[in-house]
Length: 141
Image (tube, rainbow, N blue to C red):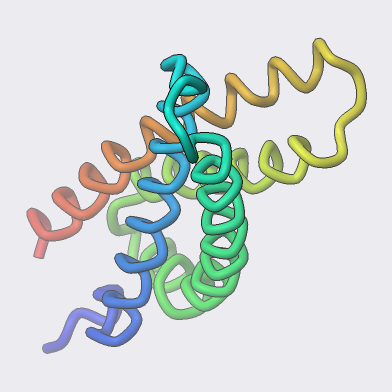
């Protein structure tokens, strides 16, 4: 019997392309910000390009997440499969989406600074949560 909670190949491929692009664009943007690369020609242009890529990938991730709700999350929840890692990754994703929105629209320097740090920390941890979720899902099947 086929496991209906497993992602089909096209959706899995789309998911990985979008989330790898999202992670790498965010990570490289963070590195440009944290390491003084201003002395290198094109660093600021690269940071702008990375933010645009990150924003586009974030929009794509919202579409994929919406697709996952009925096709993966609800089925897994009803079958009581992989609930803890699934819940944590869903919460992390929702916090990333909210904090990403907040980076554009939250006012005040203190709130913005906290939002940047929260977004970066959760974003850096996200691949580990995803790997745990996938590992636990494969382990039980």
